[in-house]
Image 1 (cartoon, rainbow, N blue to C red):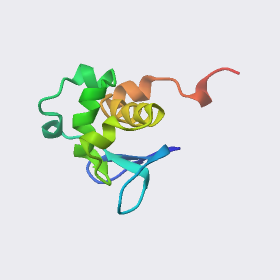
Image 2 (image 1 turned 30 degrees about the vertical axis):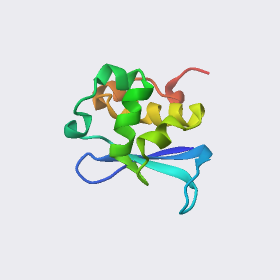
Image 3 (image 1 turned 180 degrees about the vertical axis):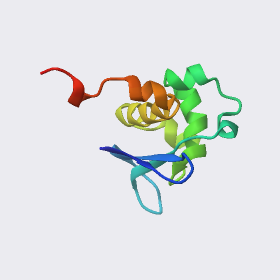
Image 4 (image 1 turned 90 degrees about the vertical axis):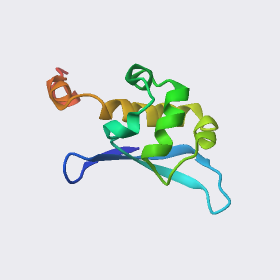
Length: 111
């Protein structure tokens, strides 16, 4: 389940319910909220790698934009289905608004 919510000054978040919780001593993590990254949080990363959901790139970026904060090790140990969910949301953050607006949605498709 994914929800994208606009906040103040074009910051966006998405909350993802994990199929497989991240196990922690302080309590398991079952949902992760991602925040749209700012340019500085993309430092040292290749945008193409992020858009292609490269595991190493996501391993560096997700700890910078996740709440609760994931570690690189936790990202590397995620269920692949959860990594795809998180990576898809991150890729969606990088698409310009005008491109999102020009894409047909399900409601506008013929039956």
